[in-house]
Image (tube, rainbow, N blue to C red; front, side):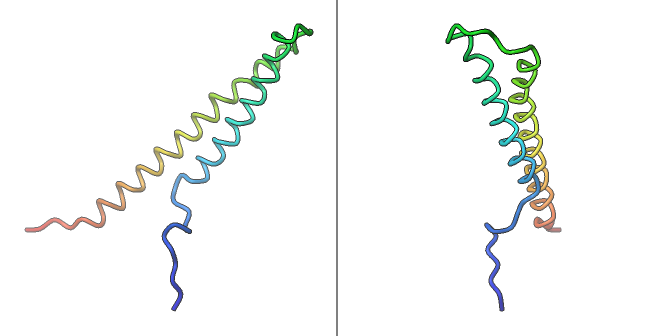
Length: 86
């Protein structure tokens, strides 16, 4: 008989949280690249780079959706485990 650890199973929302973290990290790098010329005194980057900086907010929203999905799944599981006594 195989023993399956609960920690090894992917919970609902885990993929969204990971994807949100990756997008947030890309947005952070884009923000640092966009702001660096202001401190270094070089020519600023084109306007679309400022748009890439918005990936931080998008990543945050994606991760937040994953957290809410995980919360909803936990509530559904808890509701199904509790049996009303009569």
